[in-house]
Length: 226
Ligand code: GRF
Image: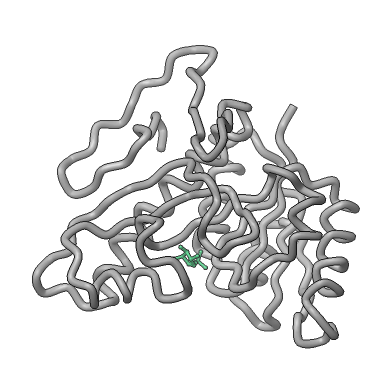
């Protein structure tokens, strides 16, 4: 049976778009049951509509406090019978109350190699710091921002003349590969948590690993077709 997945987004929604595309192509064993966006007019909403994925705009400025907002969020996700919550550019912290309702079922992607450079300026902070390797991380969400157990990370080089746009584009390209891969592992029930360490269990039938070409590196290895 397909895993029922809901996406939370606030902005452009390019990661959401990848999940729409790969789900439609039959690469991901998921049912996209809902996309919720907290910002009116965000491109993510338009993308969901175009992909035929049910969507909902829940404007956070209309709720008195964080917990009340998360109660509305929770109600919508429960009604959609979501089993996995995928945060894709969702620019809000979720409350403990929300997380307790979905234990081990909320994941996020961050544009840096955590635990370095958490927060909203991940890629920019890495560039300003002068790191040689930047990257992205898919992790479970816990009560601390950008802190939960890591599922997969990918690294890219920082080139001497990189501006933020160039670096962000390089990171984004890899986000579009590692996020669907992580979601597929979760759909296949191959992610096992041992404390903070996530183990990826072997596939029922062997999958070929993708060989990095020197411009990126991911660990655990991506499997075809990611
Ligand atoms: C990504 O860089 C992601 O790492 C961060 O927000 C951005 C979302 O991009 N959390 P998009 O909306 O999926 O295009």
